[in-house]
Amino acid sequence: MAGSFEILKAGTNSFRFRLTTEDGTVVAVSPQFPNLKAVVAGINAVRENAATGFVVDRRNLGT
Image: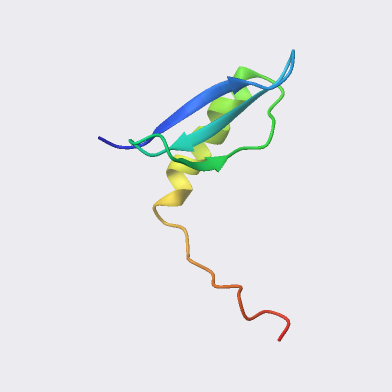
């Protein structure tokens, strides 16, 4: 089974999502979105971009 996106209320009029693995480990937590339509768009953006995203190693920046 794959991980899941959980939509959560974040205050009275805002939402956020978190991405969890199948064992419940939280992998990512989103910023707040003003409405349900926006949080769903955020989830779709993560789904579309995660598979093709580059891994950027920033450990050596500033040295």
